[in-house]
Length: 366
Image 1 (spheres, rainbow, N blue to C red):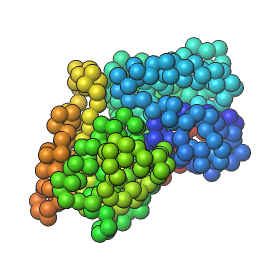
Image 2 (spheres, rainbow, N blue to C red):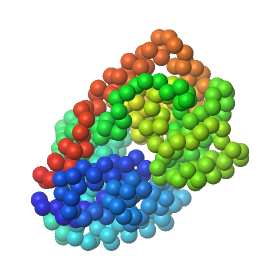
Image 3 (cartoon, rainbow, N blue to C red):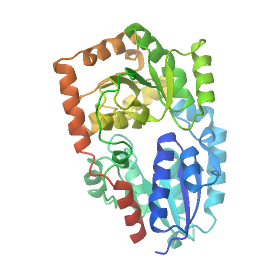
Image 4 (cartoon, one colour):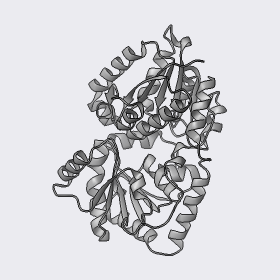
């Protein structure tokens, strides 16, 4: 297929990074192709122009958050459909499954669907909940690109075209695991406003309990000024510690406290011992608890298939518990040594470097 026009939709900060990496990989092969996107600053930089819609209008998390913003979500769906009526050759939907699967299902019924290719980058977690969505993956996508090593077999056994190429995050950081004395405790409380509002106070109090001056990791979707103002408003005080952009700034840190999500995977690649924490609204947690069929939430534990990294959710996500777990892995001893070994095993399971280049070349064959 001679793809000339590409539309990318990434609704979250982690998807924004993946979308940008895809643009760079595809442009290395086909520099003349035309791109437009919904996403964030990383996609904007990769394309060399502004995105059509930014993450601030897209990144909603949890049942209650989506419900509160239902008008905005419905308006986004309406406007996305209008854009997709244009003659695109390739539509790349990145993660963001609740929204993207609805779009893919709608596209599957359009008369122009046979004239384009639709690819989902990052497989929805159908192995954890809502396995019924497999039918959409099978019928509405030309390919679903999973990034976790246990996903392809699950999907392919259910009829999904799901080739595996490894995880692109392997190429984001140099494989140098030397210690950085200036980065003791890393705090990575997420990228969405709702995550930050729930987790920043807990993370800050944990650092104080440990007597640590933390390094806050700022997602690229927030400017430094925006992020500092937000921390200040949440804490009602000036945040202690320093703020740095991107997980690469955590390289060489002693340990990390991190929100469940892509950041756990990046810290695992960097080999930084961590504790995973998360809170959602009570309604979302109650629904998820009834529907989710896996024991772990962090990507490190899911890939390894065991509880290598401590996870504290909801009421358990408090400064006392988190500080206690961090102290265990901060001290030199068997627990820290075991986690370092586990993270090395985790990295080895994510595949070789060059994953996004392989993904881009595969898309050319569709």
